[in-house]
Image 1 (cartoon, rainbow, N blue to C red):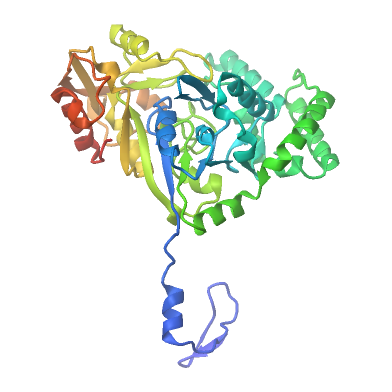
Image 2: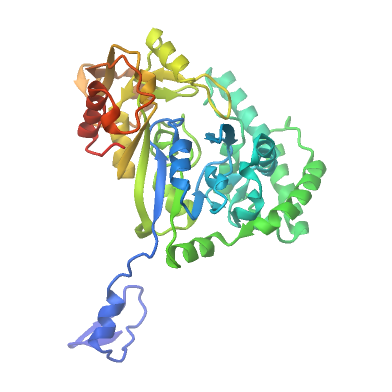
Length: 452
């Protein structure tokens, strides 16, 4: 308690108010003025259901980046990057790892399957010289959780059970991502820091976690001793790469001027909270995942670019209002070569859904939109764009949370003229035919976000 103007007061936490010596006004003012961040992160996020071409945008921005980060997901993501006519496929490694002057960082929000990580590096090394020296420029957060082989086996069993019980599965990649995040949330997950510390302690934790899953799934086949032996080898390779991720990012953000890029995996409509639940991934692929998955304060988030394909695609099951299960969908699928990088699955295709993209913008606050694969529409005489949803003849004011509602929506379309000529050689907005320019302006006007 303290007496101020005859009244007793306490601080907000119930502790006594401590009287401090008066400081000069200039000192007080300096302390009260928030410090402007030295460096801010630039973020690239998918604004649909994934496969928008984020890798291409990241690759472009990563050319002069100092640090390129992954903040969530695992090797369920897939980015394809072409450099010097060599096609590299990335699932866990940030695609910026091809920039030999940049540090690549895998943050605490990522779940890491170690055999997948090292296999991915080995396969890409065989393709070309782009990945040479990757271990010298990769850092991994000590707080990142590990995906074990039994997580992947459980993923497959769970999908099987869903199919048997409900007649439909979630369409997961069976990479163990969901079960690994489940372990994290259940607080029996195992982190990178555990693996590179006392191996005996790690071994005990691993056995307990394996036994936990064996109790839940008696038919699960786990080679505990074999996997432990494999992990012991990975621990030695991993140790030089591991760093305190929070301290690493703090130094990068508050030190000398640096360009820091964050590449999102998956996309807004696959976000565990904001996506088309339950047909989603198990992490936050929206902008909030940057803060929690890297330890970055919100004030250090700079420009946020949303990547939007000029039409819409989706892999696996789940509601898809603008899907075209017809010749148009087949044309988009064929011309766009729409097959998943991670699974090879054929992607479902449909018209651009601007209600969906506007919803993604509400959550992420995009600074600008990167529009990809416009050239796939080159042969179409007219192009439709979804601009409103109706259910039972009534307009929906917002994107529905309930997937039963989303499956019943009818879409209102705006029909725009096609351009029926190639845009492949276009290198600026002015190079595009007038109808293509009008298509882009329509998107900008609807979203109130610039397109580049």
